[in-house]
Amino acid sequence: MHLVRIINSEWVNLPYFLEDEQTQHFSSLPLENMLSEIFKLEYTSDLPAFNNLKKLVDLVLILPHSNAEAESVFSNVTDVVTKKRNRIGNDKVAAICKFN
Image 1: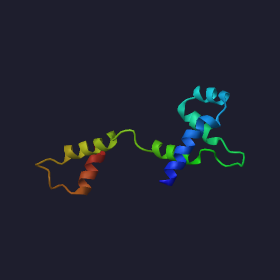
Image 2 (image 1 turned 135 degrees about the vertical axis):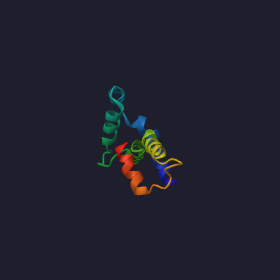
Image 3 (image 1 turned 90 degrees about the horizontal axis):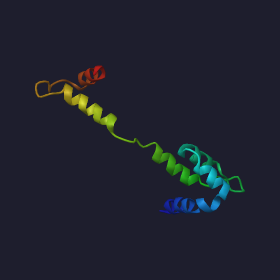
Image 4 (image 1 turned 90 degrees about the vertical axis):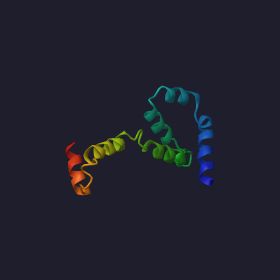
């Protein structure tokens, strides 16, 4: 719970950390570039200003945007394994799915 408060604090303080020119500059950038530049900002003591917020954003960005790839695999398997072909071993199913 402590980390949640720290991340929330970084998020709330973000607008106050930036000057007007920086805000205008960042708002004109694509999201990835904006985040990259914001996460490069440091406190006067050379500490990253938004280190915990960056970690959270990095974790969110690695999540898949959909499950289409997994659904495709299940679809291939159900095409291969049918009521008549239900005794095919896992190795053979995997080999057949690679060709589909």
